[in-house]
Length: 518
Image (cartoon, rainbow, N blue to C red; front, side, top):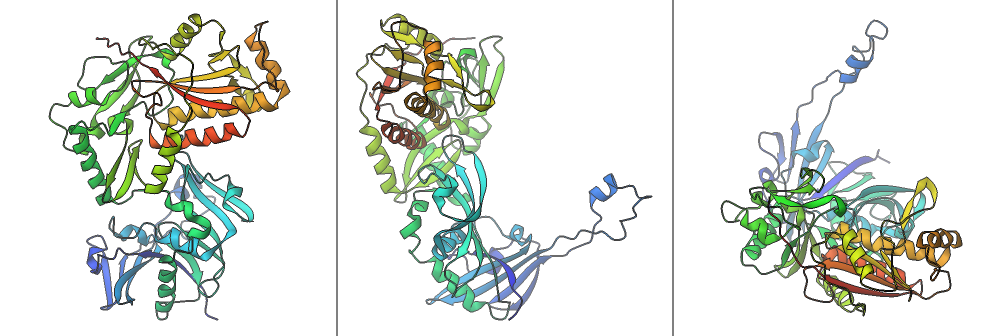
């Protein structure tokens, strides 16, 4: 048996058929024949920097023995598959960096791997929690496991790569990894690899993965520069036409009590929120390029000294959804995502069917959350203010807010000013955490009642509660319009809360804008 080769394989996009269109300019090349070519950068031995900075030369003369040399090799191979010519690129060392941008199929590795592995043979995943925290993580299990064992949420987590044991040993044995590329160790070399490449290509084109991993098609990041450019132009066109498909919001959780307002570069006014029409008015020339949104800044102005405490790029504050070439896309925190159209319809249908609270919330006359909560409580008997009443509970001195307002008829109201997916995701998660503790933990209930400190009312494990999610916004609809990823987070929280035997309702609190000038 020949020694195994470590392979990292990219599939070049089908519309590209010339080798030189794949590789960056100025790279050394070695032509084998019309179907095969090698590109490379010459390697030179260097002394590692840490050898000079850390080791005492008089004590340990290692410079003569320790050298670094990085290799950059890219091997390209043309193969006719089903009467169509496809090009494969095999990267060795740092060979990937010789590739031009947007030349390979971005899902080749992940789809190929999912078609070859078993449902419960996964060892490692790289994931990103999109929309709410945008947190990236790499998780590894000590044994082969299923995707649910990793705490992976198929509705809100995006998979970057996966390592698992192949179950199709006729193609490849052992652990394989799929992301943008497909990686494995195989008994093949330059002379006999054609059959192997045809087999993994057939795996890539199979739909078998949908039996166990259909969720992978729900949400995909748009990585192609060309696709991003088309989407950016479509978005700019829509904004200029005032189609109301895009809007702006704070992209992260902020302490509204310490915020006077927001200042847009090239605009002297301080605004009480981030409005897309105000941002558009601040441009010296009409919006026609995405670079304008990337260079435009928005500052959070402190209520204490009127200085900037946070600065964002305007592009990171834009949210919205759009259709292009019969596909659905959304933008969140400056990044585009392709969303399965059926999934978009499903989430929107579920969100719009959420029961609306019958509580008569007063309009918000330009107040921050804290002041609005106080005003709402003062104008409604039977409302108890719990905002900022943090309950220290659990390990690490964790602080939990029961809710913003609790009513004597067992309504727990969670209120937040409209914001991006991460802001609203924080609100939804707060409702889930506090409700779970109320329904299951006697010690937490005791601590919560100490904070309520009202002899006429207390919570307990047996009461039936209604959870109300109230969002302060300019929306005219009773169910507020929120970013798509926030809808996903809301529906996840909604379904989780229903399992706790509570009613869940939503409400829009009308925001009455008051502009202030410097």
